[in-house]
Amino acid sequence: MKNKIENKTLLITGGAGFLGSHLCEFYLNNNRVICVDSLASGRIENINHLLKNKNFVFMNHDVIESMPKILEDVDYVLHFASRAAPEEYQKHAMHTLKTNSIGTMNMLEFAWQKKAIFLFASTSEIYGQPSMVPTPETYYGYANTIGPRSCYDESKRFGETICKTYAESYNGLDVRIIRIFNTFGPRIRHDVHYGRALPRFIYQALTGKDITIYGDGSQTRSFMYVSDLVSAVNIILRQKGPKKVSHNGHVYNVGNPQEVSIKKLAEKIIEYTNSKSKITYSSLPKDDPLRRVPDITKMKSLGWEPKVHWEDGLKLTIKWFKEKMV
Image (cartoon, rainbow, N blue to C red):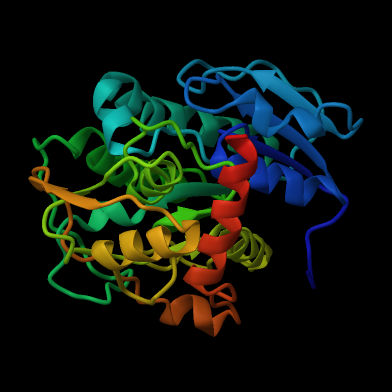
């Protein structure tokens, strides 16, 4: 990749998770990487292949606790620690709240001490049920503050507010926020109760179980392959810091603008796995978004847009699932 960050030290929270492990792997080629993860939802198997690299450090630590002292310089802090699947964050609601609030403050304090650039991994879920689709960064969101998803949605919204307040209060603290839309690829959790539709559908198809769709399947998502997320992060980190902190001056939608229905996703998975699974339907969970499509005009202005078609990424992910399930 052109203009890749080199000869720097990056600290990545949630580094043993799905997204975090890909970022650790990507940056380790030319940098030093400190991976911080409590393994509450991350998996050590995601980073096993990195542990022998002399420029890779794994720190088993929960970000809701103050960071241990790190003597070396750190140039970038990428805060990706958080449960992100509905069934999991609802089961661990209190910890999810603390991770995205206290944990974010702890990591901002650490970034300030190190004079590091700080990147907060937010989510498209902060938009709730948007009235503007595709949804731009300037949309304020329409979310239920006391619903079943609120522990995640609202803590991410609060996390963004914390980032903005720190950037305004700590003169010189460089903060960037990315709102990530549905991302998938190898290493995504594939246990059946994880909650996300795409890995659950693949697992069900490969094991011959019925594919369960919540709702009638007309609801949509925008599926981005993980390599496109990594390239977007790299571009955002390389931008010069915003001259003035504003609501969307340092916030970026990162996602695939191609809208796909959940039913079509299920049908494609059945096709690509050559499965005999049937599609069944269940009631739609409360506050489940009906449409989720990013406006990526801002990222396009930086020269980024997804390169991997979602169907090509799906085939690669299915291949990984088959290898893991052997």
